Amino acid sequence: MKPQKVIVLGATGTIGRRTLDVLKQLQQSDPTWDCVGLACGSRVDRILEDAKKHWPAAKVASVIDDDRADFCGSDAALHLVEACASTETIVVSAIVGAAGLRPTLRAIELGASVALANKETLVCAGHLVQQALKSSPGTLWPVDSEHAAIAQCLRGIRSDQIKSIVLTASGGPFRDTPLSDLREVTPQQALNHPVWDMGPRITIASATMANKALELIEAHHLFAVNDQRLEAIIHPTSLVHGMVHLCDGTTLLQMCTPDMAGPIRWALTAGEHDAAVAPTLNPLELTSLEFTPVDTERFPFVGLGFEVIRKGGGAGCVLNAADEVCVQAFLDGRLPYLDVYHFVAEAVDRFGHHDPSTLTDILELDIAVREDVANRIP
Image (cartoon, rainbow, N blue to C red; front, side, top):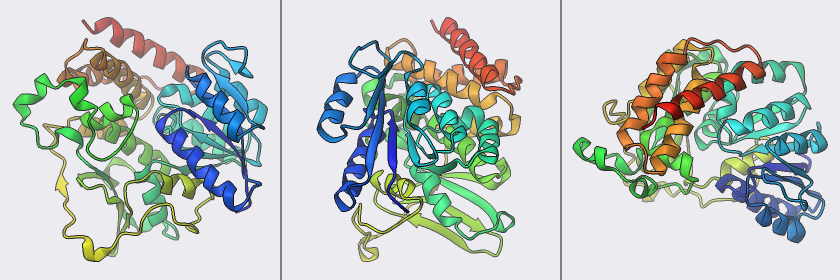
């Protein structure tokens, strides 16, 4: 793949920072790789410093008003995409939550190659993304480690050969915690993920496995499979990131050390595996590969994810919006850990029948769910 101009949305987050590290590595071997746009929430000083030091051609966008940024306000990332994205551009969508929906969809419409780390785009508007991909030259490369793994396994495989797709999950910090102790879980405990270093929202969603529910919905849209051909299993070491069972009894799986540099570089280079970004696994050092079923009593979010796939329509948008509100309430100490699931499930019951057909409809549903859930939290 020829070098590209890259825009990083969510440049100060975990994925955004790792993307810039990978981009610096690419630039060392070929100086024509460049970052032409950086977007963040409130930490504008950080990306301004980064742009000045490494990416002098980059335009800067921030949610907060700052006259040093090229674009400001709630639509800053969208304006950055409209100003800089084209068929010659890669847009790394790493904004957390529904805030990444509009700029990501616009990047596809403009024909950019999108490296998608914002799973909420597909969860909330999978049908709109598929429509945009059909009507523009834009392409989509999943960055989530699980979906990047599945995409690699599926190269050269026809859809009618797929028996099922399996997403793995570490089980988070509470995989073995007695169920009776979960009522007293604190935000500090939930933020202590045993494998991955992520932002607060994703880390809490990984603890509850709401994140796996979102990933199942994302896989449903990415790979065009229904709930009957999707599975989730617990794999504590996070060495196997995804599996594909084929109809003839063959199982394909992808393994690598848990480092996001691999899937990020794979997406930036349109599927290349031409440089070392993580240590190669030595099979002689693998004493075991542990897999266990998902405990649905401990992790009811996984079942809710399958329910949302069956419901279709706006149910994914509802689940995501409610979870974002509830996770923040938990982090603020206003909602017990176990109640995060109950409030989200109730929101899906109340709003899951909606079937938004346009981006405006989806954004209006998102706002309505957030307001409703926020008003119900004590």
